[in-house]
Amino acid sequence: MALRRAATPLLRTQTRAASSTDLKEVVAAQIPGKIAEIKEFRKNHGGDSLGNVTVDMAYGGMRGIKAMVWETSVLDADEGIRFRGKTIPECQDLLPSAIEGGEPLPEALFWLLVTGEVPTAEQTQALTNEWNQRAGLPSHVAEMLDNLPKDVHPMAQFSAAVTLMNSQSKFAKAYAQGVNKATYWEYVYEDCMDCIANLPSIAGKIFNNLYGKHGHLPATDSGLDWSANYCNMIGFNDPKFIELMRLYFTIHTDHEGGNVSAHTSHLVGSALSDPYLSLSAALNGLAGPLHGLANQEVLVWLTQLIADLGSNEVSDEKLRDFIWNSLQGGRVVPGYGHAVLRKTDPRYTCQREFALKHLPDDKLFKLVSQLYKIVPDILLEQGKAKNPWPNVDAHSGVLLQHYNMTQMEYYTVLFGVSRALGCFSQMIWSRAVGLPLERPKSMSTEGLKKFLKV
Ligand code: AMX
Image (cartoon, rainbow, N blue to C red; front, side, top):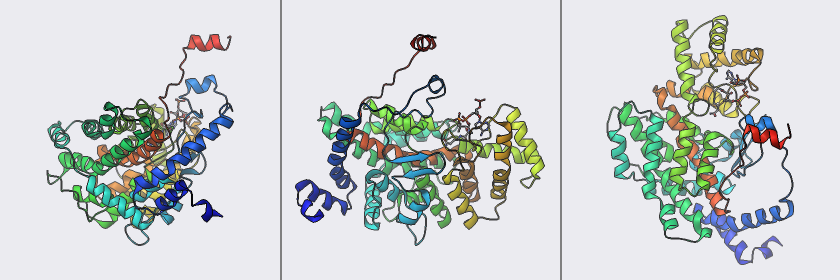
């Protein structure tokens, strides 16, 4: 029966595309079905309510308002992230890796995010090859980075470089030429792929310019995967560090659509700003201390803690005092709490497992583990944070420190390299199904009172 149905032209294309190693061909085959699904769903349920918006939600940062569509991942408050329905441990099991039993390749996760399908090893390799072929940093971007003063924060450098890449935008050119709306996604796809291909070079150049032993940037090596290329560019060739980067670039990709960076890319992209401009806006949001910059903040905080207490081996009592002092000084404990999660972040857990496997005796890791036992009780006792458990950022820095990437102000760049994959996988779909300009209604306090007849 299924075979008989596969004889229609659309299904024939879909069947051929499913085994294709060309990501664009696979997405192209999926798009008509998705457009039809959304059309049908809206026709039958367009008037159904998704829930009430309260005054507290409007003042409280729009928490929990179901008001945007994001296909690539969903965040459950207790369980954590699922990428196209798959948890992090499932992705670690199912996605192709560079070494036997190793960490998943971010290429494979990108394929999963875009298509909803677990790629084969051949499809993953094809994506690696394609990104390597597309790599080639425009000279004006390299020169701009070379000429920036050393005190410009790495995230500002990163965002500026991605903005400048917009000179290469195939979408912007196609739009200016007046191409048909139905084809927007194809140009956006091209830009996303070109941009991803260049992220190791941009991040590598920023690192080498600021801290590198060699000023130059090694060229993309066609024999290396995306993460290994990045590591090679910055001269970090320990195979365990390369595995760590594969894991890092996989788990930071996507966290559904409402977080600051993903939502920003979605909002800016909805104005049909090209993918470079949309991503650089997202990076500026990621650079905030309550969001991605928290991975830098955690290390700054730990460094201060060690300096103040004189050692990284301290009693629980002294740690408690330090944490209470932090809180009483009106500061947050970086790396703890979350706007959605209500349990330990599985991105924290998988990094902890990496540490238990590869660096169980690392002193900073032991301190981070000790804090895991102490901080949640203190936050609960303080009674403010809705989630006392650690998030992804509480753990990433300690792993980087172990492998001698000690430059904490650079850490959010790594988060941004990974987050691009999540933002872009949704952006391709947003243009493919023609999501419109985002324009929620805002109200003044006076308007709210009048509306509620207060
Ligand atoms: N330490 C101290 N206080 C905290 C806290 C923490 N880790 N987390 C939350 N709180 C406080 C809030 O500041 C807020 O205080 P207020 O009433 O005086 O304004 C109160 O608890 C209620 O906040 P919430 O509803 O639990 O959290 P939120 O949704 O407003 O904010 C987050 C979420 C992540 C910004 C917050 O938990 C926080 O500031 N954490 C520390 C910074 C951090 O780790 N950020 C990274 C998050 C993950 C990511 O995006 N990369």
